[in-house]
Image (cartoon, rainbow, N blue to C red):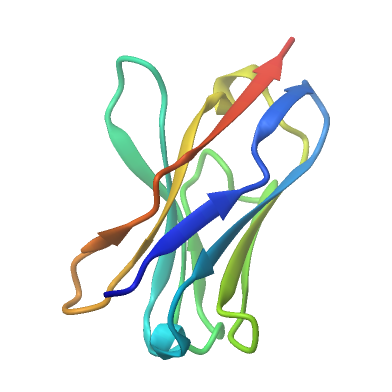
Length: 118
């Protein structure tokens, strides 16, 4: 069973940058589309960025487009989320997810907290 582990969260000020990482436990990682989601307190979990298995296709939510970049390194079984120009409204728990058994997001990491102070 594939396991995903996020890291890189923390407390930053508005305008700062952070890079999140999500490491997968299996080499079959390279077969899966991957995504980053976030959930703010009292709100639903929403997708913010996705990337195809090859890394050739990336999509972003409007709220992060132009500020966040999703990439993957299949040699390291890892995806990344580079977050620039962070805003207080980016404060949330960030999760990575994979489409392992289907086209649904069926495998999740435990999440990493990102807090942006104004």
